[in-house]
Picture 1 (cartoon, rainbow, N blue to C red):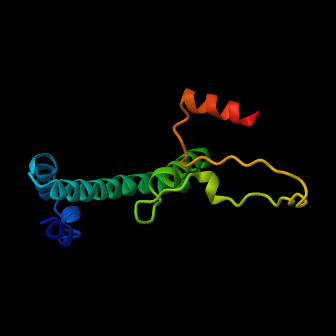
Picture 2: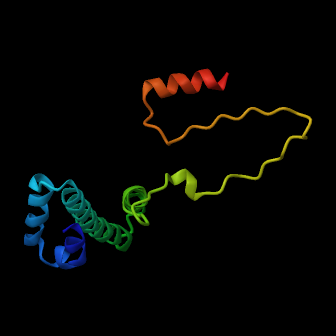
Picture 3: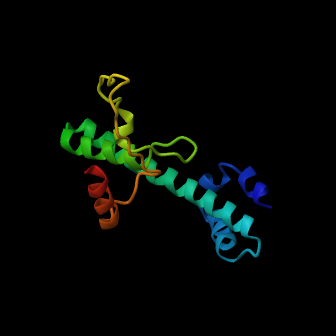
Length: 133
């Protein structure tokens, strides 16, 4: 059934009243796969709508010469509304790092890697401080 909902494609965008079907299935369908598919479609539709509003506002800022506003809106757009297949990278990954030199093979180096971008919690900050020493 989930494939059926996604096959309706743009119907969810062009007929907002039909989103009630997705909302109902997300909240009450006994099949968890149908509920998850409905949630995914709703997320896509609503983010798309919000992205259009943000783009409209960004164009207004640009056309009126509001460079500070345009910069803020563009940052928001890049942070939350620019994605490919639901993957969003943090902004620091959009700029290549500066060149660096490699230490000679005889010199030891220390490397620390974390598995995700983190939340910035106090526990993560404490761990980072310990690892930095």
